[in-house]
Figure 1 (cartoon, rainbow, N blue to C red):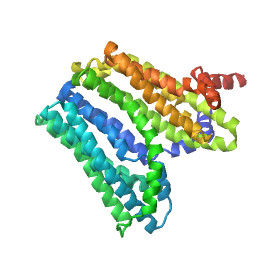
Figure 2 (cartoon, rainbow, N blue to C red; figure 1 turned 120 degrees about the horizontal axis):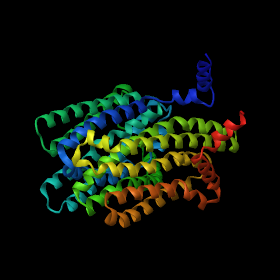
Figure 3 (cartoon, one colour; figure 1 turned 180 degrees about the vertical axis):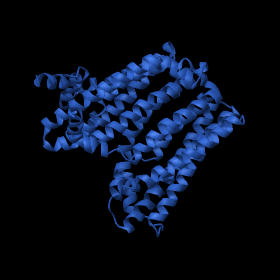
Figure 4 (cartoon, one colour; figure 1 turned 180 degrees about the horizontal axis):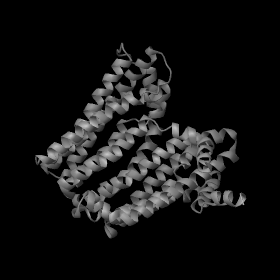
Length: 444
């Protein structure tokens, strides 16, 4: 009975109830993609082999730079403009956003396509694959609909649309494996997933927002353009940081090395996805404590940082014990080198989990300029470290570059600004669970 009471008390205090209730449709989407995508992608990777996977991933990595440009980086501004507005305002916002997205997506598509064609060095297959992957930018223009759905608690329609595309594309990939199709068809399945998701998003939007008509606002268009650059720069810096290692490996070491390394990155992204789920659920609790004052915010931040750091320790230990077995089961011996890449990458999860809520702390305390500086520091440092380490240590060098970059930008950088020294101290204490140790000792 005491155990039951402890569970009930734990659930009711410290915002745990509200945190668990905050796990919504978007989280469900992440979980399904994380589990289902892992299994399907593992099968596809085994079938295509490291070289073909490397060619595909290189095109995706280059395209991602242009995709972030086409997405405008104005998600928060757009969502704000969709919250509880009249039908007329909703349609006007949608029409204006879609117009801007289409214009910039065409420019981005051409930029990505021509750059990939240049990198292909007259290889016909790589040129075709590059342009196909680049076309994903055009298909995703309907993503502006997700801003409306997110603002008005209609995210289930986003999830239904995208999961339907994911399932049908997965069936197509299985069919292609069984019938011995080549790489181009699998990229077709990738585009099919995006296309079905976009069509269903349009269907749900037209159904929920009818009558739908075109209503362009020059004033709103200029407002988005004004917000575009500063927000885009931060988003672009983050994308460079997360993708540049794969681009540099592809150029410096070749497609096969990239194919092996990218499998380790895919598995590492599971820990990032788990962190994102936890962080999105914990942010409301941090906000609630901020309203009580800076001391409550600091106490809550240390508690959350300590908890997340503990989770990362378990994840790293689990990975170091089982990485070789996991890579062998999922991808086979051709990708054996990914095991060490994964072990090294997972060390960076400690710093990611320890200081990942730092950005939320800075937003709450109105220090957004430090977020911008951190983004560009991470981008510059990561490029420099990859340039230095990849030629000497290969793909492991890229993994080490990730560790050093995350450690610097989420922890050490705190001590370079007077306003963030307190964050650095709280995070340092979190590595040793000082918060929980003091709580434990105070009860004795």
